[in-house]
Length: 294
Image (cartoon, rainbow, N blue to C red; front, side):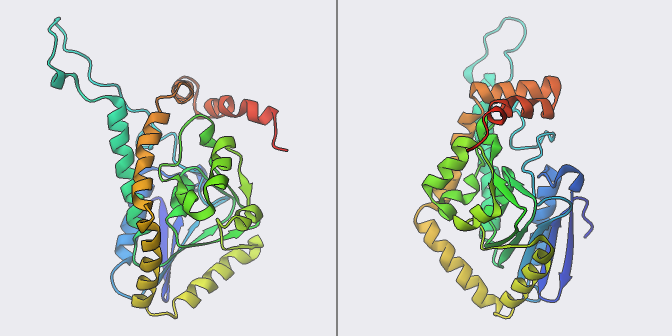
């Protein structure tokens, strides 16, 4: 199958899926997400491929959701249908759906799609270099392991006025509540060494070693039979699910839909429409840039 926004190669028992929008810093568009799921579905049958390596082309892993895409989970949801012309007062059912309820439903669907990848039967190893921000955390959160280059940066700057990662990037499960709150309260990114210290990634490597050593890990994992790998993966995942991971992840739809009703989120959207994404990002980050982290 041909892809426009990803690339897929198979080398023995390891398949490499590469996010391939380097001009957009591998931002997650509707097309990229559809192709990513299609590739995972195509690689699912059989045990010839036993491990999936996930990486990004160009200067970074993933910059988050594509804010320029109308299909982005952060794109504005149109207001409910206006009353009919002519002065007649429509019945309640004729007023249309509220923007908030439609936003919540769209976010629930998005979270369910991430949970599908969380339940994928083959191990998925993330290879992260450069930036892994916002929606990139949702993607990283459904991977089983992560190796990072020491130039990698992780965070959710959108916390400053745009929204939460719909799944919270599985961060509470991976790094705990207090560290997750710190990332969301400030929107400040952390470097790869801090990400390793708090348990977000498994190993930090020099950039020139990242590709080879991540592939070596994938090949070593692939020595284990696939049925054993699947059982190992799913029994560990079950612990998180028993503790409420699925319900907590889906709750992200409610909280993110509420966030999108805040004055800051509405103003961000207004600036995007009037002046573009760069102007909105500059407005959002101005106070933080003037008061750098200590």
